[in-house]
Image (tube, rainbow, N blue to C red; front, side, top):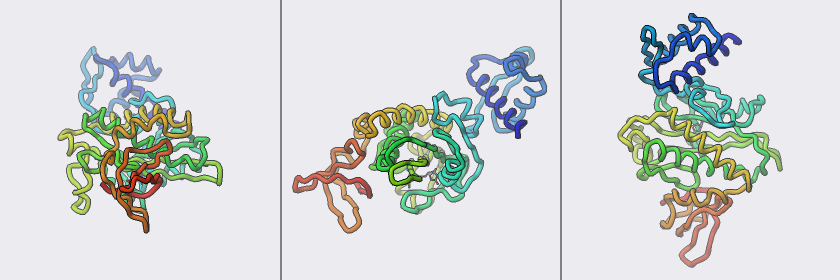
Length: 328
Ligand code: BTN
C-alpha cells in the first residue's frame, strides 16, 4: 500500500512537471527533483504511456508529452488542481455504483471537508426525486464533493445553488457556450440539460454531520437514449467539439472555492444572487409552479438571498417558492 502511494505521488509529480514544461525534461532532472532512480522514472513514464499519454523521448533532451488522454484519474486531477481545499484529497474509481453513495460512506468514515470522489462511470447514478442518472464511461463528469461546514441544516440546500453558479461559469469558460441555470440547479444549454446536481445531507436537528454535493455533467456524449434525447444534451453536441473533462473539473472546483467563500461569509446567497440571476433561464418568463396540489402560473424576476424563486402571480401577489419544480 505504501509502495502504491509512493508510485502515485511520483506519477502525479512527473505529470505535473511535464505538463508545465515548455520544452523536453531530462530524465536526470526528474531523478534529481524527486530523488529517485532512472529505473523508477522509466517505470513512471511507461505507466503514463499505458494510461494513454503520448510521451516522446528524445536522446539527450528528455521527455515531452505530445498528447493527453481525457482522464479524470487521481494523477491527472492532482497535477491540474491549484485549489486550497476543494479536491485536495481525491478518491478515483474506474467504476462505482454512485459517487454520492460512496461520498457518504467516506464522510462517515471520517474523510474531511473538500474530499472529492470521482468515477469514470457509475453503475447506478442517482438523480433527484429517485430518478436514475445515466453515467457511461469516458464521457462525463460524475463527481461528489464532501463538505463538513458549520452551518445550520436549514441553509444546506443553498449549497446546490452555489454549485450551479460554479458549474455554469465553468462551462462558459471552457466552451464559450451560453450555459444557463434552470432553477433550482439544472444547467442547460440551448434549452437542454447538460448538468444536474444532487445534494444530500446527514444532520441532527441543529448541526450538520456532512453534506455531499454530487455533480453530473454530460461532457462528451455523442447521443442520448431516445427517452431523454429531447431534454438532455452534452457540451460536445452543443459546441461541436470535444471538451476536456479535466479542464472543466479544474474550473468547477476553482470557482466553487470562491463562490463557497461568498456563501459562507453571510450564510446566504446575497453575494451570488446577481450572478445567479444573470444566468437564470426562467427569468422574466411565464412559468408554471408545480407544487403538489397547488399549481399556478406567474412570472419570476429571480431568486432571493435564500435561494427561493420569487414568483409574481397574475394578481400581483408574490410567492417565494422554496422547493419543487417549475416548467418554462
Ligand atoms: C438531477 O437529477 O438533476 C441530479 C443528478 C445528479 C447526478 C450526479 S452524478 C454524480 C453524483 N452521483 C450520483 O449518483 N448522482 C450525482
